[in-house]
Length: 467
Image 1: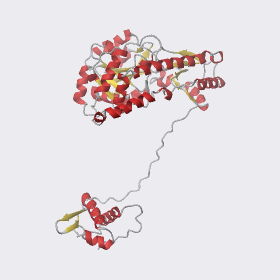
Image 2 (image 1 turned 90 degrees about the vertical axis):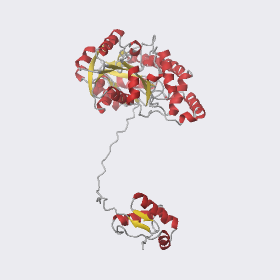
Image 3 (image 1 turned 180 degrees about the vertical axis):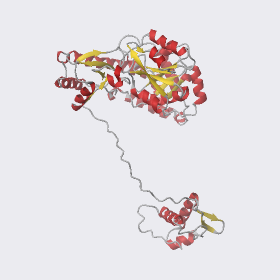
Image 4 (image 1 turned 60 degrees about the vertical axis):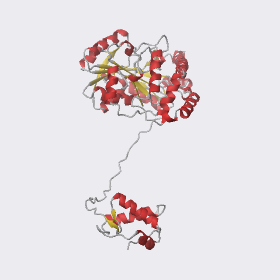
């Protein structure tokens, strides 16, 4: 008769403890294959527990294949001789070092946005209404390309703001541009050569590399990426930010854009990925037309995100595919689930369609213009004129500060970090370090506190690194 003690089982249930005891005896061979087990009632009486408890234990053992039952005869030990008896091996747990994010007194190159600028009240109101009015739609699985309501809202926004005439069926919504890049690689092919700008945002090249595709770098001049450099690396796909390049701030003139479109038209499998980074924040004049809007040969894939206009924590991005690529996407990749929740998609669609997004953009442009003027005014003060020269474009939320210093970029960063100040050097964005330009640093003013910026300028002077 099976006998087990239940004195020290702790918080574990009796049925679970009994199940583990019998399972252990079977694995260790104390209960032989084919051995007849006590009936539920007999074992319950012997152990002083309920019949239901024994029944639950036997049921779990049966579901896992350790015992089986024969009608009107009872329970028997199953044959588990085929199960390999693996001796436990004690593995040494590796030490995982998670790099903590350094907290700086002042971060001059941060792309964060001011938390107070997010329209929390409006967003909460729309989300409550979406939850109330769209209960059924919220519970339905979104199409792989995103809800039609959001894609329609984006198409209307692009028509009014960027003069782009696109259909909702051309738009694919996803959680962040990094995810969209991986989709494009699957859509366009891993056998293609993807070309990125040098200098440029380093994460783009890293994403291509992590997806096991060949990535090359093309040098830039004052008009953007060089078409000759694109040809030299035998690129099939060119990834560019023509409206406002990061980090240089260059805006590509229309002549260079047509040069690249001509390059793409030379072969049927060539495409241009237009990353419209920061396009919403052009500080003077009208917005620059997109390459997509002048593309008549279906060669441009347009990409943008709401992370910059709303907040980086809203991971909603989208791409506009040429009609033939949109059809190919639906044929090849529509098995993917959309990575943005329906709750966020419907809320954002309402935010755009009801005019809140346009109002928010206008408010943020005014806010950032004021931020820009205040930051630049500090550098124009007599005390700080020695800091350096400002090189800026008319769009985006950053500029380049050329420091008057004889220190290397790395030395400048180290000295400033010792003072609690973080700053990125332009040279850090170059793949070809031989072509990099020294003593130029990226200043992003989207989240700069003016008093902190003035204190940072004081520490720059205190370092005595300027002539």
